[in-house]
Length: 268
Image (tube, rainbow, N blue to C red):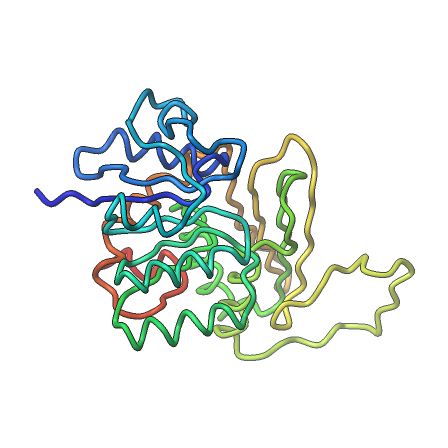
């Protein structure tokens, strides 16, 4: 049995800690590196994650992560733009990367895409690792062929920095690609309060909610003559993302390009 040697960036965050706990439970995975913020540097990554002592200290030096740990997969769960830098460093070492960070700059994503093609090493960019969320997006894509009138509401905890969420944006793009037309408004709309109708992503209305007590939730509401169709997914804890993340770790080595969306590797 081959063992995936995994390094985790963003190791001290909530998703990073959940990932380390999940990796520690696997017989086919071994945590070999952990990158974290200054306050956690030097601490055992397993202890920080609540997985017991794993003998892997959290470091702040990206070069050390690759030279000392010799990972075969990088999992990046850090925030925003640093994920591009981390993935580029992985490609320098011909190590495939799984990126769960959202809010990446478009220029950085395109730069990664070019590097992946040149190196023929894979990067998987997934806005959501929850299998239920992936299915929701696929069902929304199918429904859009028959229900072109649609709006998305995404709800997240109040610590989320980017809006709309990566999942909502990807859902909107999938819908836009699937439906035959973007229906015009039935009337000339007047916003009495700026932004009250949400924002447009690929022609789809998206509404973002940020409140304490929430985790990660999304509802896609379709309307047609005399009926509505409602698709909703709720993540209630970080553990909901772990089965999909483990699949991503297993399969990212089989791709040789930048792929967006966990669904791209589910059938491999």
